[in-house]
Image 1 (tube, rainbow, N blue to C red):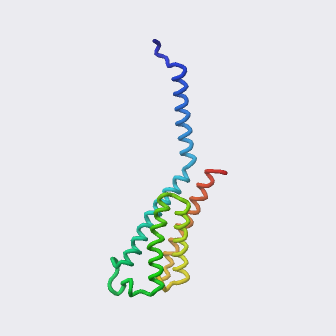
Image 2 (image 1 turned 60 degrees about the vertical axis):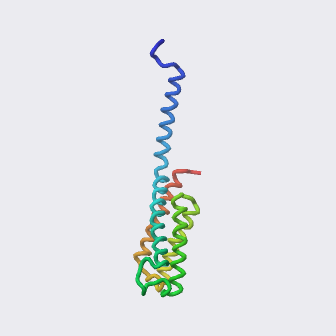
Image 3 (image 1 turned 90 degrees about the vertical axis):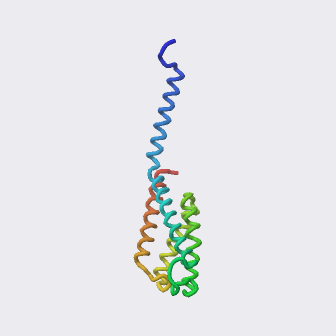
Length: 153
């Protein structure tokens, strides 16, 4: 019995090295896709926190008696309930990295920016919030564009 590997063993070893190399090159090629998924997961956590905060406002866990849900204007109540629901739906879709999750999340981002800019009486019209929403949107679009370039049609 000789100690040299047989031809089949050499082939198998060569194939596994090739497979490892192809996996490594695929991982290098999908760096922007991985970054996009990581960003979506971070935004999912942010959306959960925002959604839970809105539910805390609805249920009265945050704020005093003067800030109670039933003491607020109808527009504030409607907006708060809208964001309480849609933020949690967006969070699920973002965590799963589904296309509909990104669409729902983009709807929440644009909705909050529009409410802050067009209806400042509802949430106060904070330009910091609008800037944050715009930054998140720009980051998403840049990552999505770079990830799309990794996978040509």
